[in-house]
Amino acid sequence: MKEKQVKISLSHVAKAFGKKQVLKDVNLDVYDGESVVIIGGSGTGKSVTLKCLLGLVTPDKGTAKMTTDNIGMLFQGAALFDSLTVWENVAFVMLQKKHPNRAAAKKLAIQKLAQVGLKPEVADAYPADLSGGMKKRVGLARAIATNPEIIFFDEPTTGLDPIMSDVINDLIVDCVKKLGATALTITHDMNSARKIADRIAMLYNGEIIWVGTVDELDKTKNPYVRQFVAGSAKGPIQMEVKAE
Amino acid sequence: MQNQFFSFINALGRFVISFFRASGDLILFTAQILLCIFKAPFYIGETIRMSIEIGFYSLPVVALTTVFSGMVIAIQTYEAVSKFSAEGAVSMVVLVAVTRELAPVMAALMVAGRIGAAIAAEIGTMRVTEQIDALSTLHTNPVQYLIVPRVVAGTLMMPLLVLIGDIIGVCGGYLVGVTKMDFNATTYLVNTWNTLKAMDIISGMTKAAVFGFIITVLGCYQGFKSRGGAQGVGQATTNAVVSSSILILIFNYLLTELFFKM
Image 1 (cartoon, rainbow over the protein chains, first blue to last red):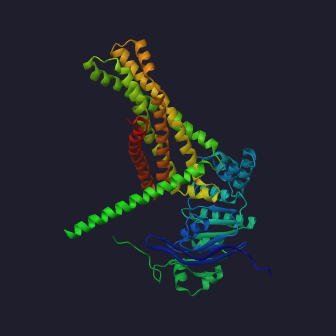
Image 2 (tube, rainbow over the protein chains, first blue to last red):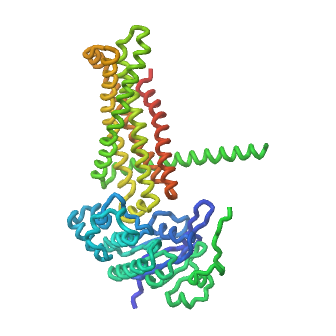
Image 3 (cartoon, rainbow over the protein chains, first blue to last red):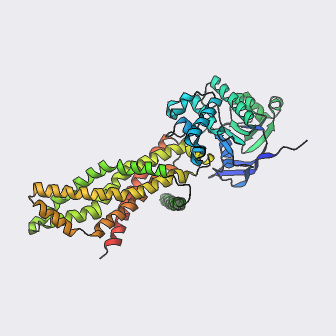
């Protein structure tokens, strides 16, 4: 059987901000066509890990590599450009490259919007006119607009109600499957992780401490993972609470 | 007592380090902008949009500032020179004061408040809502797309604004001279024309270009580096206006020395 190609590779990645060592030694490979979800509590460095991969943060040590620069990204708050209409947001890359022309780019943007369940009427609206769920959908349409080989999802369901979260999860699974893309998601929403992931990795104390499938997640004896999945305050993970 | 001394030295050391760190950061940021100005792609549409925003929409505030500055200078000069029966110097002083100093400095301070603050707030909001990170993931250099059009527009539009401000400021002095001081209108205009030197206009417009560059670079820098939420953006906006106003005054002195050193 042919071995799958590694699309995303994190090798001994370390990053500190001032005295705070956020990432100590992060190691993770994501294979072609695979959907991996990194779970972990708030402040454990999930976003920093993602930013290292995107080149927005330079690791102090180690390497964060991807095999392609044809990527898409769904940001936590969607990060839509306020001054552009919805379709201009979705077709941003096409408009910058001036290929295809504006009319064709708009048509393609409307197709992508339909793919995430949005009607053509939304195309000419501005991001400020949209609800949180609609913004996420537009963000997703923008992320898949260039048919990327790798898609990143940063807390895709944060701030959404449970039903809309499920809708977004379904859309993510659907879009990733249709594109045959490799996906890396960071979240602390376990429902989302279970739905999206082929494999789940847990980040704790600046390191990936556990990697496994969704089935293995329920059977693991790892006390950190068990506590996180159970959402319990009791266990080895102690939340930092500043008293001052 | 000893503890107080050490804590003072500590605080002073922190201030000096943070000052040099921020200065170095700003120099690197400016170098990055200068490199990007001459590198494709060029966002012409965005540059035109910003030129209209900075140039056209700042016109009313610059016109008001310079017309009243010209009027005030005419009154004050008249008060001073009439004691020596040198009323004829009013038109000359108005012209020199407006073209060399008042129009560039007043226009720059107004634009710093209007445009510098707006740029810092807009880019700061884009920073804290991850829109700048989003640009990077969409194969777009944020400096080229966001910063360069603003800096180019600011640097090119400010001299034009000041040229118009020069004309309006001199007109302000003329209005007061003719209506309040009973100067002959033709004589006032002829005196003004005869006093006019190309260097007065060129120095004012050169200053304006430098001020436009300072305002937009500092607005962009403060916005680009802003952190946190609304408070961070508010702080960036304040810093942009304060720092650019101070630098405008410092550079005004340096450029005056350069142009008119005796």
